[in-house]
Image (cartoon, rainbow, N blue to C red; front, side, top):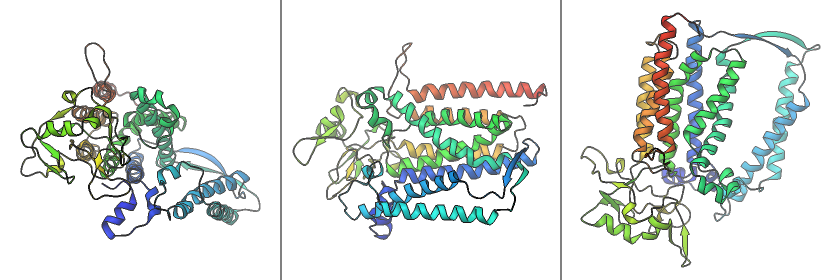
Length: 444
């Protein structure tokens, strides 16, 4: 596992750059997911524009004006925050004992770094606008195509996606939230994909309606875009070991050296008893003699610890069906022998690596959608297929993942299962609806 970029470079090249500990692997892949999504969406919107399915909107702008106070102020503020934290990370990181995760959300930083980067961005903005300055500012009418607005859509997706992901996570884990509301709201961990998807979708649709973009064609462009973005994001979950893994695979255990080995006889049951406090209370013995809370995956009894037994076929590596996430970013599990410092834990029993299953499935489904995008002629059907694919994929994965369950009508579904089921139903209804509208030659 690579919790952050420090561990990547240390493992690959032997470099020890403590400042890189602030760049978490999961965050890096989330950023990559947005970059990939922006490229795919831009490509699809341009294709639809050439087909005449999406048009431009004319807007009036004023050119030749000098930089305004607010332009300089906003550039300076962004530069100050960036420099304050980034240069400060290198200074603070000289002490290897500093918790850089806490540093990110603290008031610590480098005032000199903030002022230098802030001043640099103010100067660059001033010089840029000064080069464009005219003796008399002019009004110009320009054409703005939908693909020109991808940057705005990405920002909206980022902001409202994070808000929605955090909101739905706290709703799903209400007991944890009410114990420490502020801590859970502002914690960098704990995000729910469907929450981010729903809130980001609402924000983007609202924005695009205001800009006169035909929503049905926009949705079709978003189908493959969302699928590939989710796949890239799940790479971060797998590589960092962010806790979003499956139930235990009782065909294997973690041995005393921290390796995953095949279970023999009562090995699985004996491991449960050996780490009883971990499974029943979420705690392990600390170096000081007390107990340390390391996980919230707690069962009422050892008999209720969720697990299934599945032995890897010969053609598959064991980690694809049983993985104990050594050095995971959540620091969940028992201590690894011979490891000092942060991220020295591994799960006492291996689990099904569900992030790996999802990233594999979603890459494949992206290829399917990408292949179908030019063949499907009915607007709205491609996005409907995306809803069905993502709903089925997530529903199947939920069968081997541990999540909070809701009880009603004699059923105990998880939040993701409920939303997955609704997405499949909406997708089926969408195919029927859009096909019917297309036959009636109703233009969207």
